[in-house]
Structures are given as structure tokens and as C-alpha cells.
Length: 116
Image 1 (tube, rainbow, N blue to C red):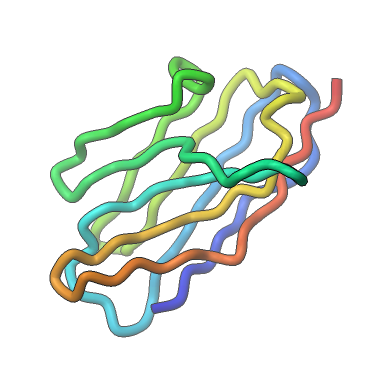
Image 2 (image 1 turned 30 degrees about the vertical axis):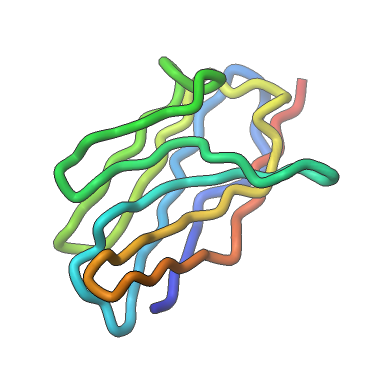
């Protein structure tokens, strides 16, 4: 399974971005899709996740500003990021878990930089 993330970039505080991550390859039914982020010297943290039943979960720090969604027909997960803050600066990684084969996969990451 390959994950191709896109949509990162440089944006001013208060701005918006939409990240996308498309899965391809030997895909069964993807159970969970998620976005994580990581900054230098810190552990990768969960930003948001969405199950095959569209149940969502968000980190407290992004609630009300980030929205995760998925298009199962396209095997794609999105992260709409609004009201960006400098502390949102990080490399964002997409993640998928496929329960049928008990496997998970990571994308390579896309950099989001927020200037103040």
C-alpha cells in the first residue's frame, strides 16, 4: 500500500490549508484513516482519525479548527485546517489501518509551516 500526501505549504497565521492523502496498491477495506504530525525533537502525535463508519476523533488542540473526512471510493482522506496557528507547524503524516490484514501504513509526510 502506498500513501501519497499533498497540500502542505507555507501559510500565514489565520489561514487555511487542505491536506489530502490517497492510498493505492493492494488495498482491502481501510478501517481507519488518520493524520499525525511531528515537530523536531517531539513524538509524533495524533491529530485526527476517522473510521470506516465515519466516527471521528480529534486532538484537543485542534478541535473546532481541523476537520477530517474521507472518500472511500477514492481511498482518500482529507484534513481541512482552518485558523492555522504557528504551533501547527509540523510535518503531517497520513496513516491507514486495515483490520482485515492487521496492517498499518504511513505516508511520507507533508510539511505545513505557519508564519506569525
